[in-house]
Image (cartoon, rainbow, N blue to C red):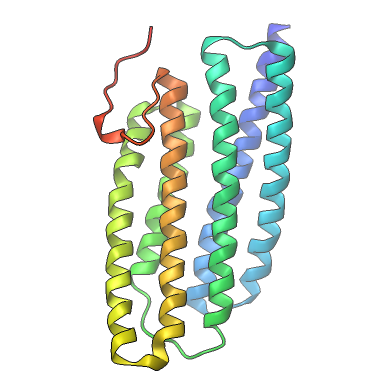
Length: 226
């Protein structure tokens, strides 16, 4: 029975890793579409979202089965609970990538407003946050998870910088407003992706240490619960 339970937990982790890989790639592909002004990437992101959604459903079903049939305790209970929450955040990351594609397709219809500098930087930061949050989950690394939480401020600062710069464009030339707003929204979607990566890391800390740090990551201490 224990061996079967371990195999089920392994399957759960594998599905989460598959989902995370798709989510990471969808971010990169969406930004690639924007940078290269290539709408062919849009279909790939939309297909990835479908796969992510299916995996989210499968993970939900597996977690419910494990709760009902295995009655997990202690760390196993936290693992399943964290997995359920993490899959939800990964699904939303897929949604945000689709939102980026939606704005990109609008931008491809018009001339380029400005060279892209901060948005690709922001995307790289957000994508790495997702990657590291999942690595922390696999390795049960609460220190790496905390590091991901702390990086969220850097993404927020870049988002503010993008907004201020594009606001200047809109004030100087009213014909730039639509393009500037689309770029601002892309920045907002990337900021949300970073927020979801932070959520994942908070759940990793909950899984590893049994500590809930939501909304107050900076006050967290590393003592295990009894």
